[in-house]
Amino acid sequence: MKKRSVKLIAVPVALTLVAAACGSDDEPAEESTEDTEAEAPAEDTEDEAPADAAGDFGGATVTITGPERDDPSIASLNDTLQAFGETVNLNIEYTGDADWEANINTQVEGGNPPDISFFPQPGKLADFARDGFIVPVSAEVDATIDANWAEGFQIYGNVDGTQYGVPAKTDLKSLVWYQPAAFEEAGYTVPETFDEFTALVDEMAAAGGAKPLCVGIESGQATGWTYTDWVEEMVLRLHGGDVYDQWVANEIPFDDPQIVEAMDAVVSLWTEDNVFAAGGSIAATNFADNGQPLVDGQCFMHRQANFFAGLFPEGTVFADGSPEAVDVFYFPDINGDRPVLTAGIYAAAFNDEAATMAVMNYIATSDYAAARQANQKEFLGGGDVLSGYLSAANGQDPSVYGPLEQGFLEILNNSDLARFDGSDLMPADVGAGTFWSEGTSLVNGDIDAATAAANIQASWPS
Image 1: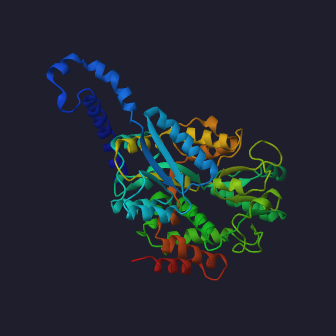
Image 2 (image 1 turned 135 degrees about the vertical axis):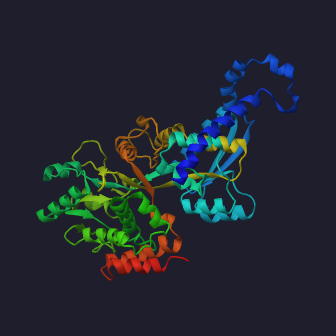
């Protein structure tokens, strides 16, 4: 509620500042006189405002860094940003960095940060904001965010009631991968509610043959992270956004009965009858090794984020109506609020220069999202190729997305509640530590949910 009250106030402030800027465009500094004002009718000032608002930054350079470093992402980011830069006479340069997290710290400590950087973890963005390293967005950018992004995607760029981050990329986690033809052949239908989902799992298990689910949580030093995603999904579905937020902030402790219930709900579903684990056990099966058994018919469903499209066997076709095609459906809700679990990237600025804020404002728009998607697909050959990019910005041109990606957007656009990956928001000792390790022990049957939750809570930094 605090965030929303701030945002509602920000819109009229933005309009006031824009109006003030329009007035000053025709009255430069101290040189304006009453005669000059008399010669310039008010309607001419208003007519000139849009052109002035477009801006001409005299060829200035805006530098941007971030963790996206694959060739399609770098190419599409630079093509998209440079095309915008040409409209306002700006040179915009994006550099992807494999060691972004370490290097952005070094750059800030050395007093030489970029103008803008992309943050994959809202917690780090918040730390930088509280330390005074990044600046709040301008009123104009704030209004653009309001116009293009639902509240659930704005809040993780907001720190203590002030907006610092612009949503720039969205990952959707609340997906279940399946083969429609396999469902049809077996007489199964896509579940609309979580009760229908668990009933379908029971029906599939009773029928024998292919298991209902493919599951694996092995990921080297990060083993267990896929279990945390499932728990986050269940906290949202069982108890809603307010409880989720309080849990992530440790206002509700990990060993609260509501959280223990969510943790237990996952392992209760992951029984031997219900799960195919390619590695012999869930904890020994790499999270990436669940695409092959699904297309081979060893399981019917796999819950995983949109990026998993790239982990299916080469040659897999998606959502084209063919018998072998793979598609997705929404991981069903419980309370009718259609929650989605997300991850993503936020842009934040290290200075409040007009050129910097102009770029931030563009990144906040649906035009940026559609242009980046189109450029990324073009780099990869066009057609219905999966780009690897997704944005939840409102008002995008859906034609730049392929059929499967349009399914992702439909799920995002139909959600009433969106929350960022909770483990990415928690202190690292917990979110990337005990939540993984204790969760793995729970999945292995070494401890129960209450013990795992108590151990995680005990590790929370004071």
